[in-house]
Amino acid sequence: MLNPLRRRILRAFAFPRREPLRGGPRRASQVVLAQRVLKDVGLAAICVLLIIAVFYWRPFAAPDPTEQPAVGQPAQFLEVYPLDKVLAAASAFPFQEPKPLTVEDLAGQVALVFFWNPRVDPSVDALRRLAAVLPIVSRSDFRFLGVACPLQSDMETPGEFLSLTETTWKDCAIPLPCYLDPYGSSRTTLAILNQRGAEPAPRPAVVLPTAVLIDTDGLIRAVWEGWIPNQERDIARVVEKLLGPRATPPEPPEGSTTSPHGGEAPTGHPSPEDASKPATG
Image (tube, rainbow, N blue to C red; front, side, top):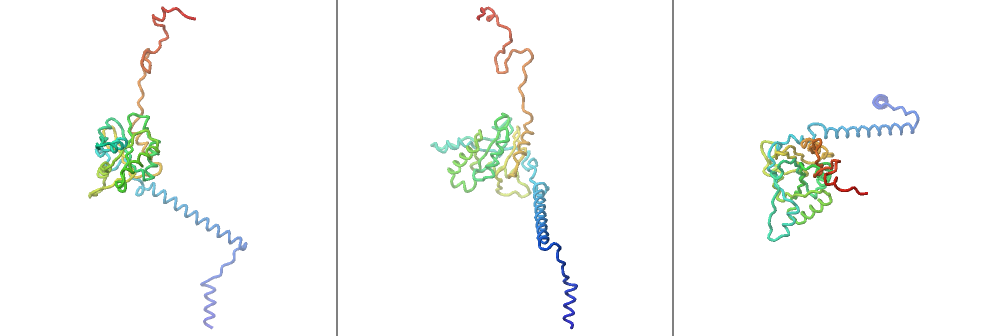
C-alpha cells in the first residue's frame, strides 16, 4: 500500500502534468519557432556588443598613434633603398650598393613611411587604400614612401622577392618609386624606438603593415602598427592636419601687366609699333 501511495504523491506534486496547448500541433510549432527566433536575436545582440567592445572599449581599442613611445624622437631609423636602383645594381658588375634615402633627404617635407610585404595580402590592400586617399602627387610638400620588407623566408630567395615586389608595385599603379629595407635595419631600429616596458626585447619586430608619420623637422609624429578597417581615413586625416591648408600663389598687384603664366599680359592698348602699321581688311 505504501508504494502505490508514494507513486501517486510523486505524480501529483513532483512531476505535475502540463496542460496541452490550445490550438493543437500548429500552436506548438509556432511557440517553438518563436523560441528559436528569440534565441537567434539574443545571439546576434551578444555578437554586436562584443564587436563594439573590441573596437571602442578602451582596453581593446587600437592604441593612439600619436602616443606611441617613438613619437617625438628623430626619425633616424630611416635608411631605405630605391627598388629600381637595387635592380640595376644587381645586374651590374661589379656590384655597387646604391645610395640609401635617409631622413636628411626629406628636409622640409612631411613624409609617411609605410612598411609592407608583397606576400602579405592585408599589407598590399592597405598600400592600395593609402595611395588612393593620400596627396601623393597633388602636394609637393608631402612624400609617400612605400618600403617593401622581406620576411625571413624571402632572405633565401632575394631575386624572387625583388621580382614579386616590382610586379606588385606596378599592379598597384602608384606613380612613385618603391623602396626597400633589404637588411631589416630600418624596421628593427624603429621597433627599438617604439618599445614599451622597462626590459626591451633583444631584437624586436615590426608588425606588417606599419605606417610612420614624419614632420618637416624630421621628428616622428605618429606610428600605426598593424591594420584595422578604414584606417587609411584616420591616417589621411592626421596627414592633412599636419600638412595644413594648401598654399595658394599670390595674386598679382592691381594694374600689373604680368601674366600668371609669365611674360607680359595684353593691356588692351596697341604698342607704338602696332599703331604705326596700316590697318588691314
